[in-house]
Image (cartoon, rainbow, N blue to C red; front, side, top):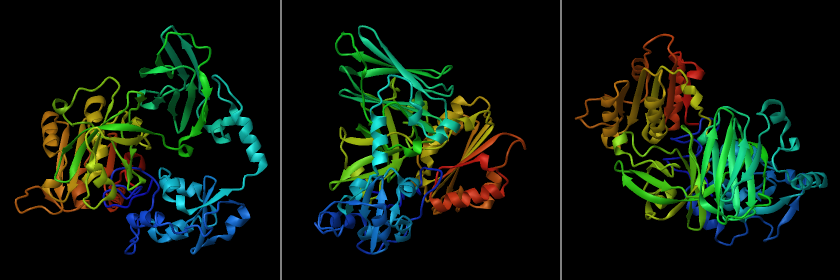
Length: 521
């Protein structure tokens, strides 16, 4: 998978998501585009300098290769010669040189851990890092431990042991036709958004999000089960029950055998992304260059993307896997336009701007109904607890930065009893660029708590609304509180310059850090 530079989504400095960290793009030389890199990797040229050999790299050897024209980097135990990639890197050569001659895993994770470097740099692979025997011995000892429920403390880092959640556990029981897996999170803020379940053939995988950690149950089931299953949560005690249907009404002697990272509590930042294939059900025009895509989850998956979080879509383009992050939206802002919601929320909707010269969005737009797209598990740091006792909500969005606001609007107007006012200021170039303008106007007419203001930077002479870019003059009037001490939240999302300037202006207007949430880096 490749980190694709584009105007619509320079991940992670995105118009749509992610609220911390990130990097800037730099101008690339002519002939140094993503497609040029793909062509180079397929040309047969020796990009490692080792003539096809793979070697074992010691720490001492790695340190020697720390120059621009001789730059080796280690990522998760694999060493790559990234010198040929220097001029193709959207983040610039200096960013890569920060990890020259060293283990760049942590730096890589901070910027874009979702990128599949194995695919992007496969022709640059030098070999593996030499592993010390003591590390290998400890790893093997851990793998031999097969427990049915309680999490071994040795699988939890010291930080988690001191500061993290209580150790979760699991158990299972059965009837003639059903198998129930019970997960005891020992947390009271668990809901259906907190659990992600996938099972394919005999492989069963359940990820439970517990604060900033992930508790993984990963088992090769001892018997076959049907595709459909149910998930229920007892929020008062933090218990999750996953009910599987047996294919044959026989008694199971054991649940199954452990697979990779089974029964582990892992910091979310250290976990890889898991993908499942979703089917394209529909796509429809929303504006002249924006489409609403509807994907259907497989029947063997339970996944509900929390408000304010994003997922990654993965496609194969010219034989190379490419990934881009997007924030799911609701199918509509208005109930009368919505399709019936399936019991297990099987549909995921995306508002995506199509760029004619964009590698990813052009490929996505060419998909036919019935084709498949891989969708990751969700990520993001927005907490729904920010809405507790909220009285006033201000939303600032530019272009496709509107996407996180869709579910926020739906939730705010239906599930926050204390809310007195919601105001959206939506920045676009022209009237034709405004996403769901009619729905926004109808929603504001229907719910008097909602005010919507459109601001255009390149309007026609017939436009009677507000004009310009984000500025103190526009915000000072728009962001007036009804009461001095009312609990408020300001959410902002758009291109990086828009968001950065907006956040500065919000601080100038005396909004505190806790009253601001930015969805851009």
